Each structure stands twice: as C-alpha cells, then as structure tokens.
Length: 104
Image (tube, rainbow, N blue to C red; front, side, top):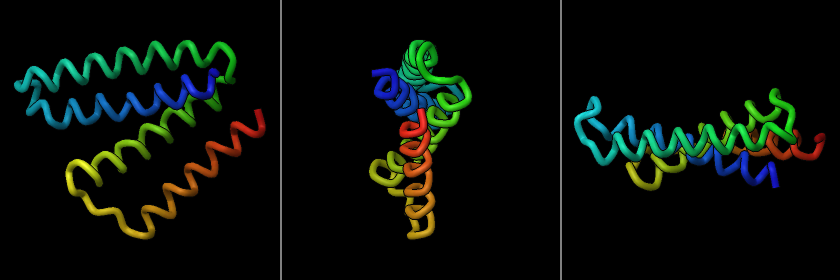
C-alpha cells in the first residue's frame, strides 16, 4: 500500500508544477490554490509512504513519478511534443521504479 501512496504523492507533485506554471506569477488564484493543495497533499502522502519505504528509494521514486507525470500532462493537455527519445527515457525511469519496488 505504501508504494501506491508514494505513486499518488509523485503524481500530485505534477499538480503543483502545473499550478505554478499556470498561476501567472501567483495572480491566477485558482491555479495558486491547485498548487498549494497539490504540494501539501503530495508531502503528506510522501511522509506516510516513508514509514515503510527507505527514504532513498522513496525520494527517487517520488521525483521520477513527478517528472514523468509532468511530461505526460504537458504532452496531453498543453500540446508539448514528446520525442521517441523522451518516451524511451520515460520508459527507463519506469523500469527503474519497478526495479526499486522489486528490490524492496
């Protein structure tokens, strides 16, 4: 269950990045609220996950899931292109996350 919580925390990390990006220097209040809500919930879930997952693994997974999520969100919702090389690298990140889970 801790790994699922960690995955959700990483996904929410992308939410605050989108909120910051779209807040227009903190002037667009709904996006500011999204950013604050997302980072708060992300950190709370992360703190729950590290009770059972080593911090070194948890932090790497949290960052990897967040970075992958923001790439996918930007591609689908904000029309940023993803090249084959970027998709391959995202696949490597996913493989690394699965490898950490298997080794735990």
